Image (cartoon, helix red, strand yellow):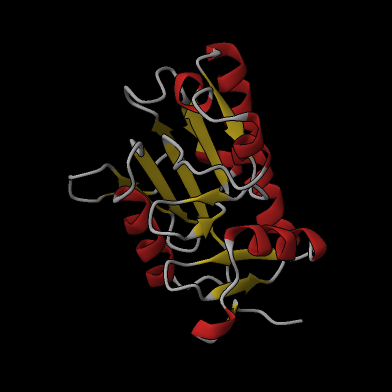
Length: 194
């Protein structure tokens, strides 16, 4: 098993349509697959058990808040979104306001929804390169609809806060992270993340 993402480059004459890429992901459902704006396919290794547990805790905290708030819905790391650049991305956890989600057709909701979440969260695993994740977060911040992004670097106990059009903020070893006005009342408790 590989420990870093495997990048597959496809010649221009063999590029997959969105339908073909979706089907490719479905028949390889055990793989974590993304496609960037240059049509390069990334096949990510499964996370280690510890990272998987931390990611589940993050998603669980977001889910509990989302159910209480009821203004949007959240998604886990296996969810693909089609960005305006043509990239298909799968954040570790994400949330979309219901009013935006409900503008999509049922068919769009069942595939890689052509929408960028309002909130995205990425958790750096030991095999992830920080710069690659920072570039992914910058890509999200250029998307219509995005409001907030968090990149959690467990190794250095840092949380990078991304907001469109604003400089990235870095929190050093926070005990909690607030969802601000985008996710009102959401407080991520970091004790089970670190």
